Length: 84
Image 1 (cartoon, rainbow, N blue to C red):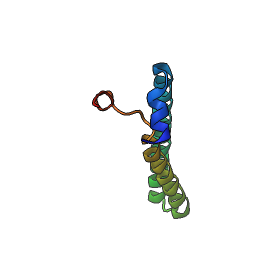
Image 2 (spheres, one colour; image 1 turned 90 degrees about the horizontal axis):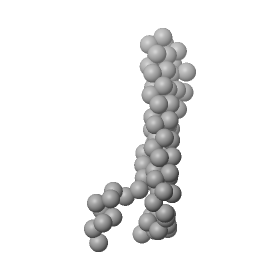
Image 3 (cartoon, rainbow, N blue to C red; image 1 turned 90 degrees about the vertical axis):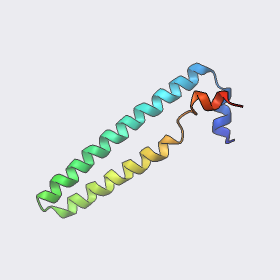
């Protein structure tokens, strides 16, 4: 078990709820920015402005990767934690 998971299991439930809420809010922010960049890339590609389209597409990929990376910090499901 990683140090993060162990400290999360030992934490007060309110701290875990605040942590989960903060991570979900960051995920929503990252996905929103990613979609915004993706639409910008598509719009610029349709207008044949390929330099800016590539830049925004890379930005969208960076936010997608950050979102996937952030998913690992969500707390374990309650059913999994109760099974010992």
